[in-house]
Length: 588
Image (cartoon, rainbow, N blue to C red; front, side, top):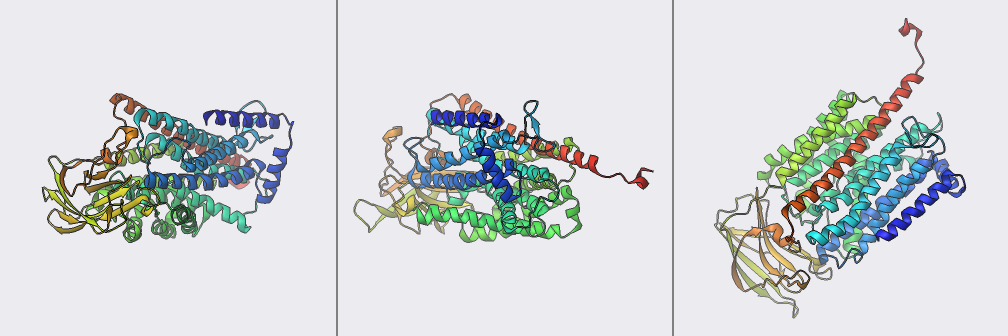
């Protein structure tokens, strides 16, 4: 695949060279036809068309890939998973769109354009799109290398997985900046956003921003989160604050609600195809309607005229009232509702993140509406503080404890069913009986990776409490074939599990953990069961260094997007100031 990528890249560079030398005309003609249709410069119209295909393909491939891992388990190889081809196709289109935006313009594409040679200038948004695409694409071969060293960490939050989804998700900011550059570069009177399809595209772009900032939550959407539940409201609040604030400032009244509604349609459509149509596990998604409504109501006040303050107040509203409204949807459809006991810690994490993301959304909205940003030090400080707030919240959310000397005594009762497909009910006695409080995040039995033909490969049973430390199952539990079945407990920082049945796995040298009629087993770190394929035979420092390299690359990408937005705003507002007619009275 790396060889294929190199060949495609070489071909792309050759086409770009021929175009720059004016030895081919088909690329110019195609872009100009699209530019005429969408009332944008050729170096924007073609890119938006390609980017739309990028998001559809990559989003579908990504959700399908997660579904396959949950329902079937790890892949036989990087090219054995059909969803990977959609992801690769989407990421290649993202990189190609950015590269074409760089090579296409013959003239300087706007005041903020980046000089490449004496006569060659590239739009900032195009350069950022190419960087996002390249960052995500690099994650694919690195992911294969990562798994060869550290084993198959079957989780969305593997470092190289975060490269793939992070590059694609943050590319939404790049395309918004490119589209804005294109509007600014159009001659006066040629920009017409009143046609229905152009309006729809603008709303869809912010719907994409909602989705792009939501990709880190997907494990929670399927109900197989491998990390504490308190992280979910923080991620929802952060994504909602930035996307809703930016949408409201750029699209005007109702913009945040319409963008959130379109995001529901897009995300819901993909879930429908991956779940009922293709037979994968079902997934839900955050609505964002409550947070968007809060932002719209705050925008009715005079605060909307002071974007930065508006972003901060809106972020606070999203992290409080907005999350409360969103919790009704979470409680109704998600596997794990938000318990009352979790709210103080959840608010402590969500509020600073949402305020920071709300201010970042306001800064993005100011760029996209041509308002002068505060001096660079202010914008950079906001981004740095927001990144630190996210980092602190994530670090707190990753704190877990495994109770010492805690045991689970389990009694299994066979249920009638098909021969060779053993299904059981379970009674669980936890010792000590006060290990779990009255309002835990979850006490469940999870059975997953059993094959898509078997209950979509995923069964989650929230256990019924029938006494102090005493629980029983409410659904038939599979303990046969390739299923991995375990008891999961999360209560505050306590996060642990007990295996009930784990199939033998010769590929990693793991023996079967049998489902005995009755047994007593200790609680262990839950990840050691969920990610039993991980290879621990490597130096501890190697994993840390590899993770820090990925983190550094991500911070560089965020810094590049911040720089690009600042450059566009600085050059455009400076140009506007020069072009304003002087008022003789004012001058006097």
